[in-house]
Length: 72
Image (cartoon, rainbow, N blue to C red; front, side, top):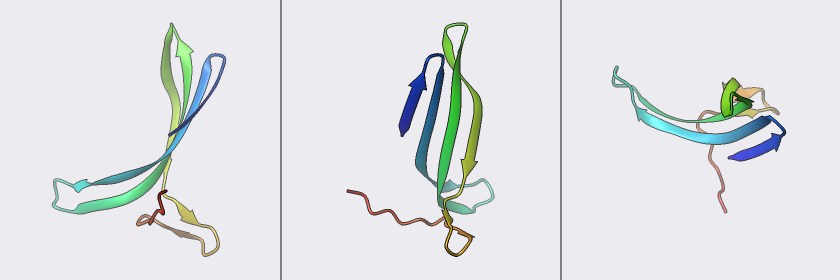
């Protein structure tokens, strides 16, 4: 997770692995990107905007929900 702050604002973005079994029995296993903007309101940092998306292969114009990461 990366966090950037400036005054009363903070921006957060991360790449998250989500897996589990839904109530319908479907097994989910995918990667998503998450971005959020937080603002200090009445002394607390609150999320005022967030966005979730699936990583994309820009060369081929396709989503990559089964992203394979080469972690250090």
